[in-house]
Amino acid sequence: MIIAIVTILIIGLVLFILSYFMNDRLEELESQVEQLSITSMQDTYQMKKKIKILEEELLPGNINQSSSSEFKEQS
Image 1 (cartoon, rainbow, N blue to C red):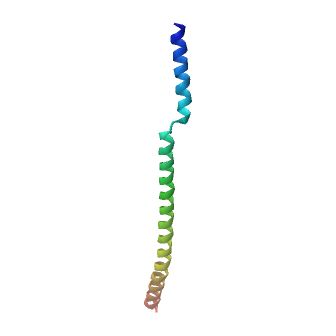
Image 2: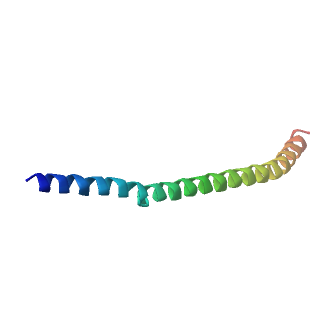
Image 3: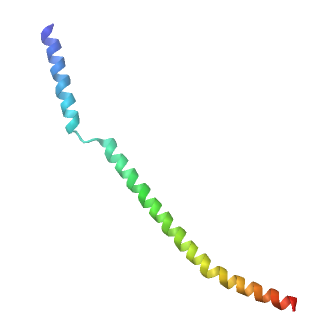
């Protein structure tokens, strides 16, 4: 009986020590998700920046055209 208990304790201790040296799959998955999230945020930021630039280029032209046509109508 004592031999069985000692054997179980030794096996448990060996498995506990081995668990520190094994690759953690969850950690790798978390790292991949984090990298994907960062990439997605960067893409979103770049797209918003490009849209803002396009809006700034397009809106002044529309404002000038509409204001000049309104001015002509009022005269």
